[in-house]
Picture (cartoon, rainbow, N blue to C red):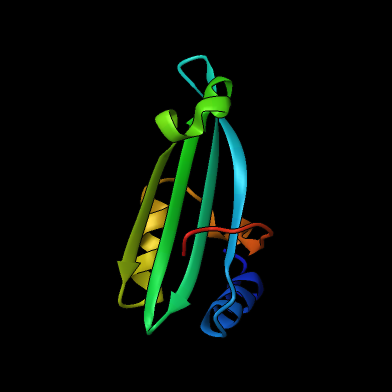
Length: 100
């Protein structure tokens, strides 16, 4: 892990900034859009996970899966993403509105 990237990421999150990224993964021959994000709010670290099959994007309310978790420390939030095989080194400033 790149310590410089992680230190900058932690610093931004501690200041209340939202950090995350989007990616496309192929699962069982289908393409899925995934979104990940992390934010500190009211002393808790909130993680955001969203995914949907690309061909179902037009009916996002029926097919999109959204999950928000809360953790008391940043290490647990990072470990949550690690358990999903998400590399937090890819997290950066993100645009758009997320329900964090």
